[in-house]
Image (cartoon, rainbow, N blue to C red; front, side, top):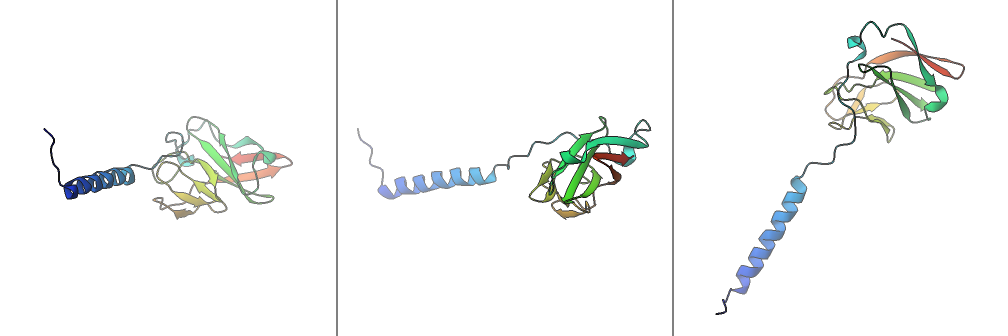
Length: 150
């Protein structure tokens, strides 16, 4: 025995179902960028990391970009080159939640955990939840090599 369903009911049910799918898609969490778990800041690093440390080669840091150097399980250093020949070094630990920043994206230091963005020249926060600057690390360029003082 066929069932007669009013056309208006069928259309209303279709619209409601489509709206539910769209709302569910909008409510999903954005994909989190790959990052590493929280690490200690420069101030938290152990005494085993003190003094001068060879990070690597200046040529490994692209102009307008940055390169991370993992010194220990407790400390990763991000070196940026905001302009040709100008190098800056920061603790790669985001000041918001302690995640290791992803690197430099679109001329900003980016943290994939919660979206914080920092200035590549100063380490100051530019957007996102971070309220304080990345820890600055003294950096010296000697010839082709980068040295940090921890």
